[in-house]
Length: 305
Image 1 (cartoon, helix red, strand yellow):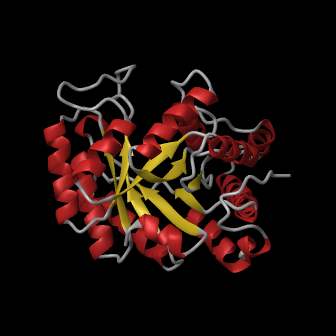
Image 2 (image 1 turned 120 degrees about the vertical axis):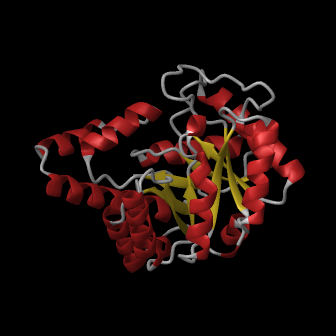
């Protein structure tokens, strides 16, 4: 099913991002995770696309298997990094032949060891160009990324939103945010996007912290900030894995509740191919149904407390 239709038919939506495993053991773990989370009525899952060929060959196969063997609606990530137009076309043809209806268009991060993105010879230079390329040649629902704390390469929010609008105009019908921890950042970003005429649904990206050290490394890579009070709370756990897990689940459940009460159209979980933390948060949300107490589906301009 197409994700734009899912968003039109029901709110809120819940989704999970996976990455293609590199070993047989990790592949088995991924499918255990996927089947565990499927029981909580996921609306779709996405599968990332490795830079420089590291995992890209597995993206289509894993996406197809999650759809056909696990019964999940799927979206394949697609990146410009290291790809020619011919290579992108071949991958898009494979995605279409697999019966997948959704593509997440990304410029992509430079391969490890390369500081800046370099447009490949014969390739594309941005996610907006990729969205346009996909929309002109294939019948996919296209998703795009957005950055509540501003893209690391953008000089300011206004410039970032101006570019984001071109991505939507090029074919992205919904957006998923980079991970964040401060809900006010999300609400302010949505308000600013709406003021710029960006009307696409903006799904909130959330990571339920299971390991603070791992999450901190991820935040450093993607320039996501951790609020000082949250960092202090994790520091007080003293490295105790169980305490960090419980704190991460409690914080994410509260964060998601506030987002859904405030009108966020959905939550996209960065699960890191593991089920327990995301399962606990999503299970709590399904039980409590906080969106019924708020403005669910409004893609709100409301503010967090």
